[in-house]
Image: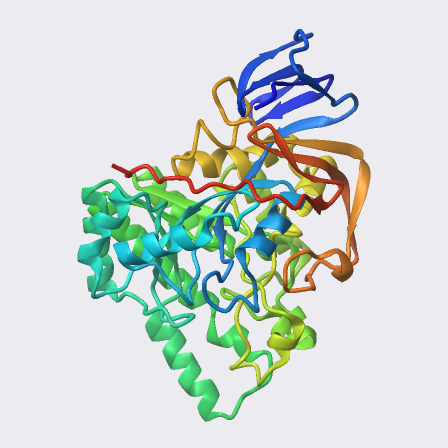
Length: 447
């Protein structure tokens, strides 16, 4: 591999920023010094920010599965174009539940990804005894539901306790979708008996109370078992506070953030219908609630950011009534532009943005120090950012198979000029290159 020297840029990490050069050798960062002597090809980063490639640890690319909604070649191309160089994927329609599933998926995905990737497994209540084997084979984490969703069975409290004890025994980690099964099932029954098919059913069905109850249960069981868990897509300050309390009591528990719980409003579903059907649904009702959530993002109460990218086309969303429409939003095209805009307009610091979407998720899922950071020995995954330019996201420039975005026609400050994976450029000016260089990344338990 050709040696590369990145000259003249301002390198930004979670700890600060510095005018410094990068020396890259064989796909890794070999040196970081001011006025580094040129070796190999030169990348002129004058006037640009140099950031680590982003790490998105909650992505659904439906592949194998319903690839008319999304697939690895298209979804990972969107990731590359918008600054994500590493992702962790799991699909509900073709879940990994045992060793054979992982072997099959790894084989299938060879040559299909533009970016490096790990794979997560799903937990079925009758297959908890299979989890240790999957961990030893390199699974990144275990996805757990507390209510039946997307065809994946929810775990009741006894199965949750068994699962967390099992995973704690081999020091694995879980990502838990928290909505209480009893509350959601009862709400669904009542709403359907009333003949409700209006979009507002989503807010009442997947309620704040259902999420809060499940977060409280999982947090208490994490403390009891000594397990490691991340609570997925926490949507309210109240949920964050429960997690912070458990963490202060010694629990290894984290709060994952997603842009939709900061940038979208609860009442949008009334007008947009299925295009705002995701779960938990958007919660923000006022400017003050948005400010409260953003304050928590900047303070460190949220541990890291992800997309929960789960796209469908507008036509797929519109098929059937609100009950039949698929859950989920596209997010890989929009998440880093949204985050970069927050940083460049002063809502959070640029260093906090790098930590939230690169360094912290890499640490949480044991991808660091190889991924998510700029330091000698790390993979040379980096972005060149023009902080003075802007980027307008339109449905026409969405790369995901969704073909639309809830953030369409918004203009964001900052622009990804180029994305590099292991020292090689994989996207420029919003367009991914055709060659797919992505590799599978073993999880921390791989033997």
